Length: 422
Image (cartoon, rainbow, N blue to C red; front, side):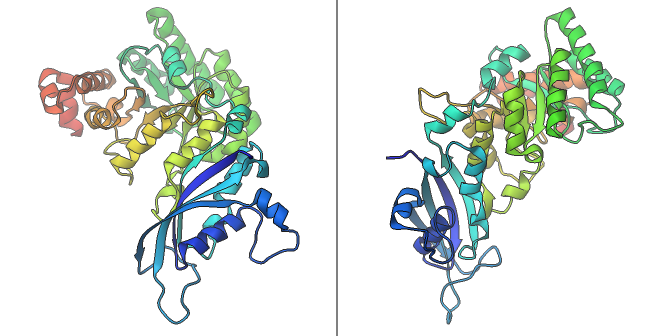
């Protein structure tokens, strides 16, 4: 029997969920809105998507999204909800990431039989692991390059202000952050190759500082330079970072797309820090789009080494439980042995400061992460050095089982962070 790939969905429909699931399976494989002569029994048997299971959920009286049609013509319809799993033979698409995306998340979101649809998870056969190399560095390689192999997270920050700094001003801030004991720094996603801070000039200025610091102290800070752009520019910018001794590049996933990302991964000799800016338009409505658990697997397959998961008590709309599900998904294997698991480093950011280390560790139970605090470091009232110290103190205390309130009585930098941000 052919290998199959599986996708699970939450759906809402004015129809019987079984009828809606059948419409989904037909739309995304051999069928369309009307029977066609070419869909022979042999083709259907070999290539049709299959409804694997349906679990009914409670119905509701009103749909969250417009455009659904169906149900009773004489009565106000009830909107039935269900969890559905579909499967496809790998023979339909081969191990192709682009065709996979069209298969599991193509026209489905527009079907009039549905008043809500959300892709929850995917399971891929080993053929995809053979076709895509996945993350090149992941958790262990990132730790090695950043020089943080001891029992703690990577402490990181973001260049702030996000835009407006010249290459020289950026390098001056990087010097201050290196002296503060930072492990990881990244460009903001808004800063790529603008005329006020050209990419090549920024790399040259920043890496001169990082290389000098490494020669003097033995510690080479990892800087994720934002290479997002046209494909030829991304490849060229990667090579510029590599030539200057850099150890990381950053890409905005939704801007470059899967084709650009896969091409960059196949070219790259550096870890790829994958930024999810724009994720909200795929996820914010609970009845439409993707769960991160499904979405992040596509980019791990493509070769991301780090993936943003938001942060605890963040400045955005996502709740803490969703953030932790996302982070745990990044650290969970995608494929069973003997294939590699494609685990990647989750990146916590967005309103993070020393105090959020405690709920992060308590909920995640792991220190394999990048803890990126922008304002939580550079806006510490006693400066970036105290900001970095406060976060290291917080993580040490959290790992030791202490409470924030007790730790703040021990560490002055942490106490100042609590007064400023808590």
